[in-house]
Length: 451
Image (cartoon, rainbow, N blue to C red; front, side, top):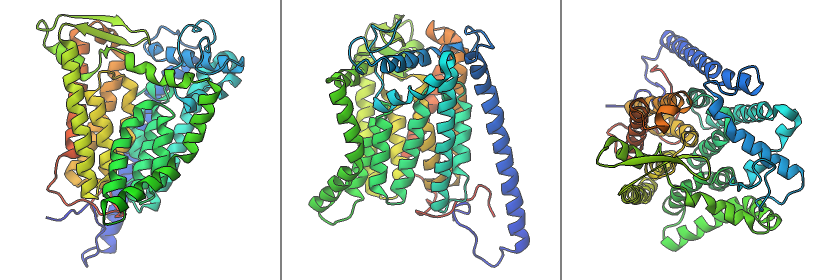
């Protein structure tokens, strides 16, 4: 059985009439998806922009997504006042006693919205939105260069719009777009570019560091050379080229902060088990076997504690680490699915980490779209795309709309997060699960509608 959607038709039955019919069908398909993107963007982003512009009260349904932007505002104010970044007292009041935990590129992104004065949050959201649109345009350009007939950037836009207000009140979408670009670069054998893009994503948030595992595995197992030493040497050269500029930025901030950047990078390691993580969901569903209490951690996240919960969290994390390494090496040795390897690494890390906040899904959705569009047969592609859309929509409902129920371990919130996390695990499994369908070859055009 051949993959009819993976290859343009070349047989004699492909008449001008059938080609015109396919073109019209594709145009209608793209129009419908575009309408969905616009509708989801208006429904998800307009309320938060109106709230930030103070036309709606801060205590409305989407107001819970905005406080993190205030935190970034205080970082920008601290930078403007000449405070050493990452040092004690860097943040402006009233957050002067808090530690700034975002990497250097995120810190630099906090500065331009100061031009909006008292409407800093509006400026920040517009800045993120502008950068997201620019990233989508670049992703579309890269997809066209790769010969993709499938509208990849449109699918990524659909995923991002479906996650709602988080898109413009966090920086994670920029991270996801960089990782999607890295996935395309690996498919196009532009390995140094892929390394640079992953490094830049890490300099936005450290959560992208897990992408280094499949990246290094790909450089070694799919790199040029017959012997292990040749492949390792080639991988080291590519890493050196790709990491040069990001390392310069790290050194500048390391010196400027007097070493404070190191402490900031390690701060997240002291977090507890967040209430939306898979271990917390398992424990919540097993009550009263797991007596649980909730509390707010020192970094402001809702966390959970209970007897034997630590053992459960460690077990899930270890299983995830083993799966991450095995899956990365396995997919690299296939030498056919680098985008799938990147998406799998992010998905399995989110499914196994004790620290899972809703915005982290923004780092997964763009590379997931790349993997589905470029490296999956028709059935698997549909499963992954539906899984990604469901992940985004469930996450938007969970935060901010029913988060009070989530934070209080209410039945509605607990079951909603459980379903979302189940979909996350299923997506991770689908990414690494063997498929009987023929896979599209590198650079092969993929059409959304059979010709």
